[in-house]
Length: 300
Image (cartoon, rainbow, N blue to C red; front, side, top):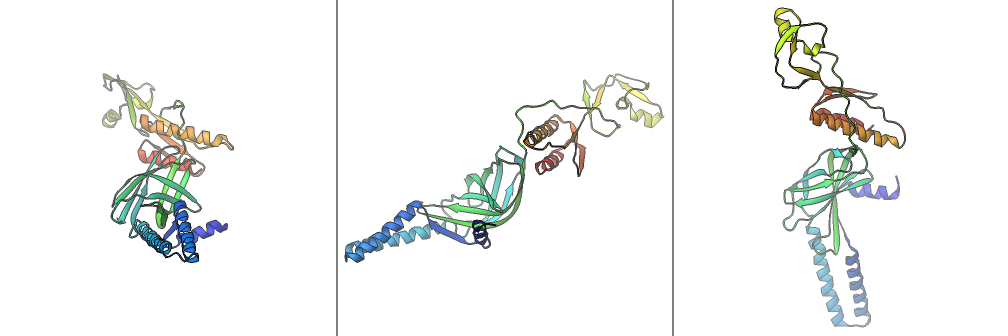
């Protein structure tokens, strides 16, 4: 841990409001100090009075800037998961906030890294913005930094709030869509059946070794005879994915294509499985299943 990281960690240990002059504020303070030296050195009472007046105004500006964070307390920080390169929504609810023109810069901080939130809405109750990630992974947030230089731009004030929130940045979606290879299910009833055609049964025939998906299991349960359904084309859709990323520069491209095919399967209603070295997920075709699979490949 370097000196900068150590100092920043000390700043974040307690919820305190920090305030420093901006570049223009530094020039103003330098001018006040220079005017004070000149007024004392040359015994110029008029210049001294003007210097003290400017110093008083400067103090008011400090207090006014501090007011824009005084009493601000977050209630909850909610972030959604999303793909690299896309805008991921962020919502911060405020338990209490000062009155007046509310405009803050928000930054989510994890360890020694920070991600700025592009805020577009502020109110007394909540702030909304977006995050954009350049790299996939699981981001566990430790602090929310709130910063502003309102209302005059002469002083900047900031505060760190501890938060417990995290975001998954899924691999970037590929611009080229590879066709998804669908194979029939091996076991009857293993997967949802997708009908291709009118879906109407014209008549029943005896079973002569056809695929088990065409067997009318209702008739078998009643009569014990194997009967196949004619006039209804049935197929069970399933795609098996195996997570085996290559080493080196090709890994991110591989994960990008895999994430794209997972998303395409969900959009087309095709059930899929994902096998990794440590787990096996599926078969399923739900939003929750898709999210869990994307989380898996985000941290591999």
